[in-house]
Length: 160
Image (cartoon, rainbow, N blue to C red; front, side, top):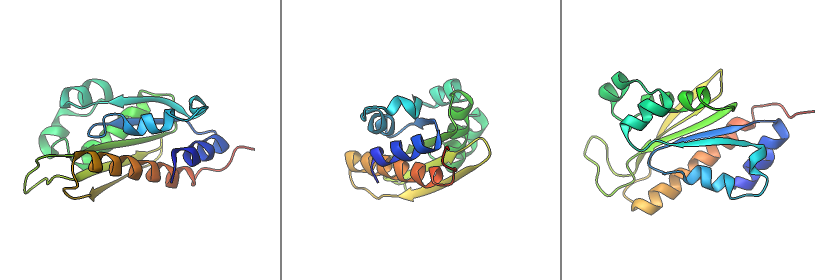
């Protein structure tokens, strides 16, 4: 799945996209905006690397961070919903994870949590990419996020 295919599908459906990224540091937004004409489907991206940024920019609840940690589906959900609330978009993807090096037995390197949201729905999932190295985890997370966006875009009807 390419960002170009995503752009074409979103444009055909009149969908605007926003991103909320932590461990990918803006790679999803960069992949989309690398394509000419992406302003037709991309509103803005949020890179919220710290917990404070997640709270300030996206409205992630400090209690959610305290209870589940930044690398959790609960925080990814709050990030995606916060991105929608602070953007002029109908579709958001959020990514938070441990690209490495490091991690722990409880949250190992390569664990990435995703959320994709519309104003009506939000789906979350966790993917264990494994200790592939920082760059590989970040790029795998970017590609997975683009695929999640594409799958959700396909549920919207085309614009007549």
